[in-house]
Each structure stands twice: as C-alpha cells, then as structure tokens.
Image 1 (cartoon, rainbow, N blue to C red):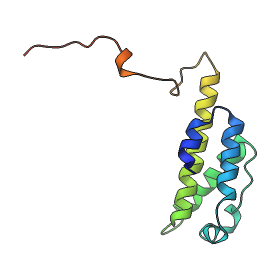
Image 2: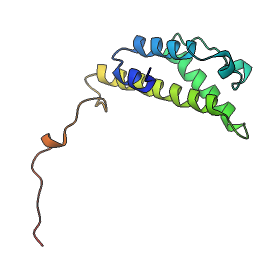
Image 3: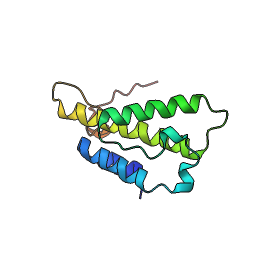
Image 4: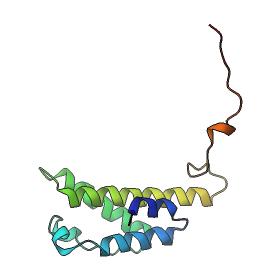
Amino acid sequence: MDWARALDAAVKVEEVLEIAEEFLATRSDIYWTGVPVGLRHPTITSEQHLQQWHHALVQAISNMASPGTPMQELAVFSLRAAVRIHQIRLKDDPSTPSNDRQFSAASAGPRLVRST
C-alpha cells in the first residue's frame, strides 16, 4: 500500500487514525527491533496520542548516533499523519485559510509580460 497516498486521500481525522493503526499493524516483529522498546507497537487512538508518539520518536532519534530505517520511517509517517490531521481541521473551519484546497495555476489570473 502507498501509505503517503492513503494519508493524502483521507478526509476525516478518524480515517487518518485508522490508516496509522493499519500502517503500524503491518510492520513485522523484525522491523520493531530497530525501535526502542517504549516506542514499539503504539496504539494511536487520538490526535494527541499521535502527536505524543511522534514527539517521542523525534526525541529518541536525536539521541541516537545512527537511527535506522524503521525509526526514520516512523518519524516521517507520524509527521505526515499529524500534518494531514491539521490540514483536515483547517479545511473543516471555513474561517481559516487552508493549504488543502485545490489550486490551479491556470486560474491565477492574467500574467504581466514585460517587453525588453
């Protein structure tokens, strides 16, 4: 599965949390050996749990001489999930500009052309 694409396609916070749980459930036991014991097999049931776990991952990585692929992948995935939740929340609030809306350069209006 393309996890980044799945996160991008999520339109509800609950979907992001479900994708995160599915992503974590598909990691093998060998994969988790590259992760500190206290950070293994988290249960992500809320946005707050996701943010706390991501923060703990980043703190652990900053103290590692050479973090392996699992740690790097988990940090990137958890960041992408947190960002997606933030985008969804912004989109749901009509009073707040969102970076999740469609943008087309074609609709940006006329361009000025300068002659040289």
